[in-house]
Length: 142
Ligand code: FES
Image 1 (cartoon, rainbow, N blue to C red):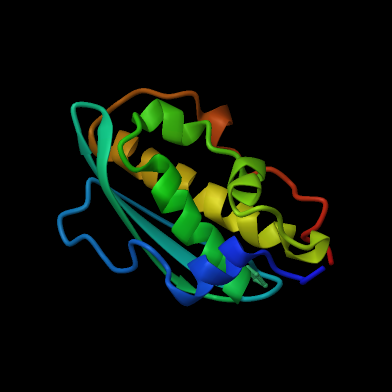
Image 2: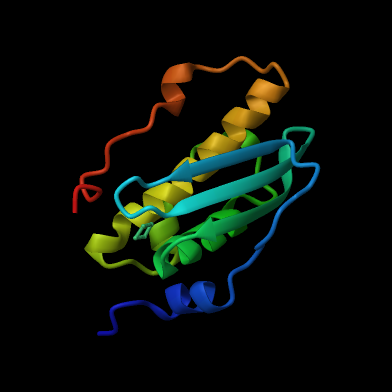
């Protein structure tokens, strides 16, 4: 079996929603200190719905593929639903990732959450800070 699924290769080679939103309502930037990869996610929100979403990722192919898929999964969704996006859901939507690349999908989940948090902060929307704590990923020590 190929190391990467066709979907991963497709989203790596033709990433969706690449770029920047100049008047974004929320911007999230996260990085993985171990590999040095950085992901920036922009969201545009209207009436609680994410109407547009773009990303810039300076990182590995899996980080690019997972951020691309994450934008596809949250576009058109409510910010609350975007917050529920798990890295596992991104991995499943990509038909899997090798175990040593799962940490790249964690970056995508965190970038979405950071963008939503920024949106909440900018709009004075109250939230439970615990929801935004970065969780430990068992794969990140690899
Ligand atoms: Fe750093 Fe993939 S190796 S995010």
